[in-house]
Length: 229
Ligand code: SF4
Figure 1 (spheres, helix red, strand yellow):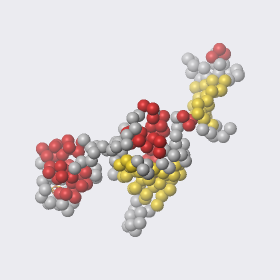
Figure 2 (cartoon, protein in one colour):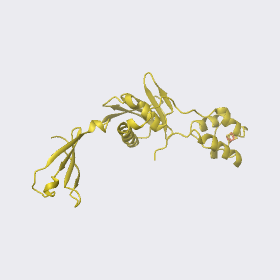
Figure 3 (spheres, protein in one colour):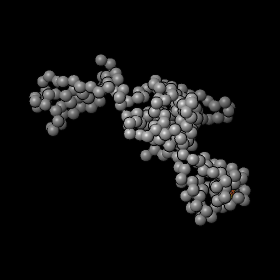
């Protein structure tokens, strides 16, 4: 049997001794008979659960490339998936509060920490990562989200829409509109675009009165993107 690395072992007083381990795509539970009182040396019975029922994505292959801009210091990351996840893209849209959802060809884009992450049926693309470690951390998290969503798919309402986006004009109305550049942007409109994209916060405008700041935060708060717990 391959991949039979023990996952956990229990010989608690209240339960019969049990050894759980993974072999291939299955989880095995070795349980001593209750009638035997769980004593060592007794024959064991074997039960197994098919991992395919609870885990959709078991592996992927990560690849990287540099953007065409010669001055770019970041990477783009691509995870080639071993399975087709198209079936649960609408469920992931619900769970992750998607930024963009396409029915044909199916794809889902989310915003996460100023990055755009796009799920295709057999690929996940991340537009910006600083290094391999960051890409691996994000993919490990996404693999957990995908598998959890797959396991709970019967209880999640699939969504083919994405929440509305903030209106630039509404944001601009709440800004001083002096184009003073104190925020580091050339105009209030550019700053409003960055606010809309979640790349700036109202506090980044030093000329914004406190009352306008509260109103702006309230307006933008309706469109907050997904934040992992
Ligand atoms: S600091 Fe505020 S008022 Fe000045 S340009 Fe930026 S957004 Fe506009």
